[in-house]
Image (cartoon, rainbow, N blue to C red; front, side, top):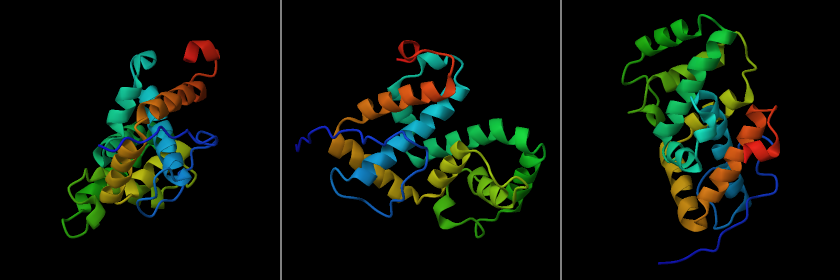
Length: 191
C-alpha cells in the first residue's frame, strides 16, 4: 500500500466560503484540490452546527460522513434551504413543490437522475427567486449540488487516499465553523 505524507492545510483554507473551480481530478498535493476540500468541510460544518440539537457534540467524523458522497451534500442543501428560504420568501417551498410536480424523467438533467428532485427544483427556484442574493452558504451548497456526482465522488475519494489527513481538515473546518456561528464564545470554548 502506498502511504502518503500528510499534506498541510492551505493557509487560505478558511479565508472565505467560495469554492475554487475544479474541472477534474488534480495532481497529488494540488493546492486547489485541498482548498476545495477544506471549503466543502467548512460549508458542511456551518450547516450541521446550525441544525444540531447539541452543536457542541458535533464531531469531525460526522462532518466527514456527511460530505462523503453527493447524497450527503444534497441532504445538507435541502435541510439548509428548508430552514433558510421561508425567511426570504414565504412562498418558496410552494413554488419548489410546483417545480418538482412538473418534472418528468426526461426533463431532469442527467446529473440529477436518481437524486432527490428537490435538488434540481431548488436550482430552478434560485434562478428565478425574487431575492437574487442568497447567502454564501446557500450559494456554495448549490454549487456543490450542481457538481457532476462522479467528479464529486472522485475528488473526495482521491483526497482521502492521497492525504490521509481528512480528519485533521474536518476538525479545523469544524473549529472555524464554530467561530463563525458562535461569536460570543472564546477560542478556548470553541476548541
